[in-house]
Image 1 (cartoon, rainbow, N blue to C red):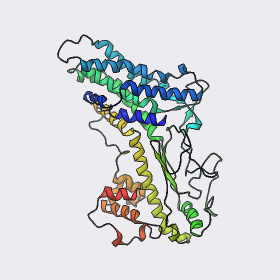
Image 2 (tube, rainbow, N blue to C red; image 1 turned 45 degrees about the vertical axis):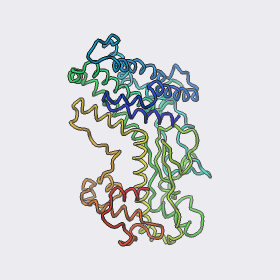
Image 3 (cartoon, rainbow, N blue to C red; image 1 turned 135 degrees about the vertical axis):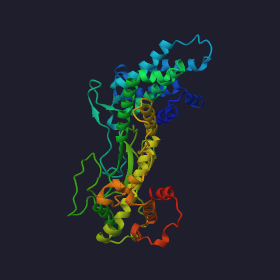
Image 4 (tube, rainbow, N blue to C red; image 1 turned 90 degrees about the vertical axis):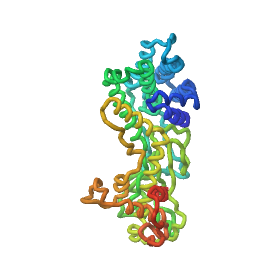
Length: 431
């Protein structure tokens, strides 16, 4: 099911430009009815597993709700623009599009599904401890939407349909009144603002669902490395006087416990049919293990490891998590939701231009903050204290670092000669 939802989300990226001409892309992909049928079938599967009665899950009516305006648009596209249009019913066509978009923006029930614990993220574990490092990603649940069932707000299921409904609403109006679109925007501004607010709320919920593993502290990392370089089994917890927290039986190691080299990003709203292998990369998660090849070259000296090796480990993990988070953000199609949101904000004159997508794009400010580079008075706003050359050298040292020669011990003659690409060095470090 997760693959189906991912397919639907990716397909609807093509439909989210809010430009009627973009709808010609339908000729190169599955028809709307096929995609909506896939959503319908996926939800049916989830409902059956939860033991719910189909008529209690209103989300099942999404396909029927979208069928009328979708058919109306096809008729409008096939009618001559400057001649008689015997098959066009402007009042009904607009009403069909309006009902679909208002239902999805105004009723929460379309965004909820039954919660199945066995379909949430669960890393496969060779022993008693799951291969994850941090709190296991779980979507927030409640019991207020379907009597007798625990439910979860899952924007991924209705988001494609909502974006499609917005598209149809604007495209149909544009084709019905090509010369009156400006007037339409003025008359319907309040409704369009509500649509934008709803979309932004769902978008933020989805973004918050992209969960990163914990970054190990120096104690966590040293507690893992020391036993390996001494030829013994890694510790279950850091040795005293290091602080640690008790891990619940259904939990996983996390910051405060000896690191297990696992780092990655998981979509808490993903639907998982089986325990996740580590390492693995799918549309719902990207989870890897820090390479330990050559770890025997590291010294069995705790203080040395803290000063020389931990900064290299931390930088690689932080950059790797950033890269995986942004990759999953794009794979799940959340950047397209941001794009649609920007279109709506500009159309309603809430802002003059499209704002950049800071979740998708890399920025020097973000990198300075995440890497913990020193700035004036510790304020990340002063990221200009560091030049791009500083960042490039940092990336290069991280990429060239090894267990034998960590980040700050890489000699200048080992660094990549200038000129060098910022993006290339960042890609080399964020593996």
